[in-house]
Image: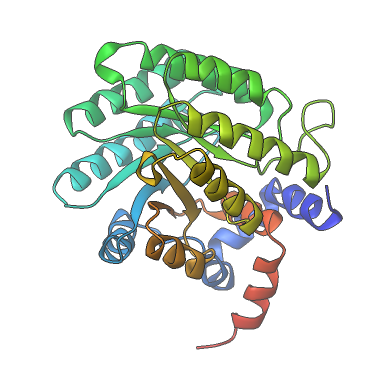
Length: 308
């Protein structure tokens, strides 16, 4: 892992810097590149603009590691409001959430209760809930919860998961999830993990990402390939072409504010693209992980910070 990435991941865990950034005008201005705003209305407005361009969206109410059950229920209620709003729109949109935001640190039963209620809501609204993946301590609990929810026949095609290619265990996890036909969002991963759990070298992460992508595309289940890396995108497109896999049977997924040019070019080529649209007051950890993932984002912010 590069020194720059390690530094930003460490900074993402600083509670003091987080308090300062989330309360400062400068911090909020910096975050606006990657965060759609602080209110549900801001996120819906951004989603509408993206939808008009032909892009699908996933809305994410930022927050993690809540401290009380009330905070977990409040976070879940925001998602219920989002699902109601999306049901009234014509957008191709769904939601993503984190288990620690739903109370996993406090009680697995609390997290299961809140997420199950949201999946029930998504079923009624003909929508979809993606359970995000967090650090490796949460990998197995996340998989267990999603598999339990997906096992209910009414929930099939309404709940999915994220798998991180930098984890050594991910190939086995993908195999198990595919045995249940669970929809997967594949990404590289953005947390700091020890070398015995995660591949430390980019070339090994890339190799695993490509191998897992090929497994997903052959599965017959609709998956999301989440990357901004031109090499990973080219490998995905080439495999789909040589294996005669219909481009409509999967989608590329990208982050709000990152590689907008690439999003548009993929659309023009006939690929489906979904943009992950985060919003909320608790943006700091997410923002720092975006800087850790792609150093070019740091240069972009430095060049544009004081432009009007």
